[in-house]
Image (tube, rainbow, N blue to C red; front, side, top):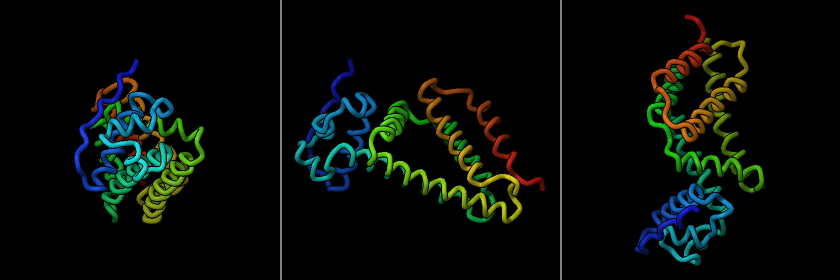
Length: 204
């Protein structure tokens, strides 16, 4: 049996901080209990607010999940935007994977990721939010791959959308494996990932 999430002491907070605290509490509850077993009251108690106060920020659990998706989307998009805009795309990709390999997400983050994906199969609102997020992120990578191919830096015989699919599947797979099996030999994994990504470069 999973212990009840520890309620937080209620203190005055700015609206943005309170909203962030509710989302953090929801992630803890979803990771510990699962989406369906978690109630709005569970989240409110863990966040240190009343259920009525929580509803002023989110109309229900679906809205909380879509907000979690949006926050993750913004984080990933920021990481993409930090990649070199003129050359260095492959190095930027490898750096993204290096960061994941060196600092894999904790079990709570992986559990929340899994809960969101699972809920998207059952819940139309969550599915639409996740699909919109993934589509925009995939389009960003696909566009960059096409630009690199136009500059003859990446193999032009590879379909950009297919390359994006494989890269993102690899990234998501490493996240899930880290959560299920724990840390792997970082250097060994890095060597394999680097060689795979370098394989799409054009021979210079």
